Image (cartoon, helix red, strand yellow):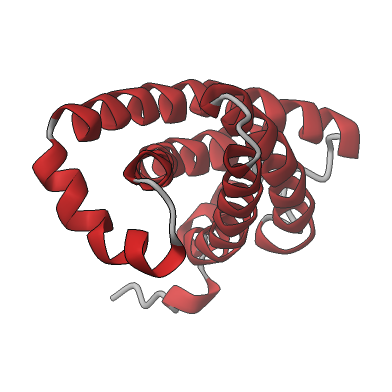
Length: 163
């Protein structure tokens, strides 16, 4: 029977790095939204900062022994390319979710009523944050698969069993 230690899998490591990247993404996004930067420009900016951080940590930890036949910059460009495709997924779900929350105010109000009183922000601010979280979530799995099998593709097939 195949025994896999979940905490050593590339997917678990990818989630840790991605979770850190998501926090970076959301913090930068929230700061930009707070300064009235358009939500799509804020999303793009926060995305690029998070992707650069994610690439560094994924190349040094998650996939550190993979794709050694490729240069650091070739992997970076592939990582950014795959992540950019996933940015489109993120923006699609961000836009759909934001539209949904704005047109279903009872759901939005339920989610943000207490936060509005606590942090003194309008529901529109929280709708944008919630929509960004949904977008990030949908893009995560596609991003992992693309990077595992393209950017950090391992030439050694036996390694796939343990990753």
